[in-house]
Image (tube, rainbow over all chains, first blue to last red; front, side, top):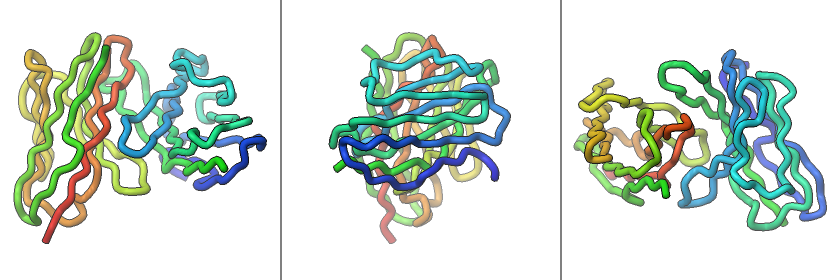
Length: 114
Length: 109
């Protein structure tokens, strides 16, 4: 595996379900991010982990819960979601303190909440 | 507040040149990025500007004017595969990326 991988690629869940999204980066980076992408809206930063510590959560509802067990893995735990949470969820990684902090993205998980 | 503005959609002809503009107002500035995103795919990095001027990379060039809070992405010799959304993002004083909503570029034969 190379780059940033995400699983599952597609997820359909009911409002009472609990599910988790997984992200893994194979780039040796020290920061990882969760973004939400809705149609015709800017990417919304949800969570940032830098050096395995959460540094930003941008007032995300508590029904979204991140977990970063090490610098290569990032999870987003989902529970009691709402239909408006349906979106593309993107994971990214970068090397902070590098020259440009360019972020590398995974392919995303297309989430549909019924 | 922080704001990134770019046109919602643009149309151009195969083989032509197109310029996608981006204006920004952010708390601090630590560089501007352009990303390309094909439908249903992840954004991929195109360019990074931190100093004023033009950066050229093959058919793509990116320009920055920090005093005007302005950047553009110039695409030459357009190909059908260039049909995608182009995202402008500014790195603020906290080194977080502030994203524009993206410009959907449609290439016609």
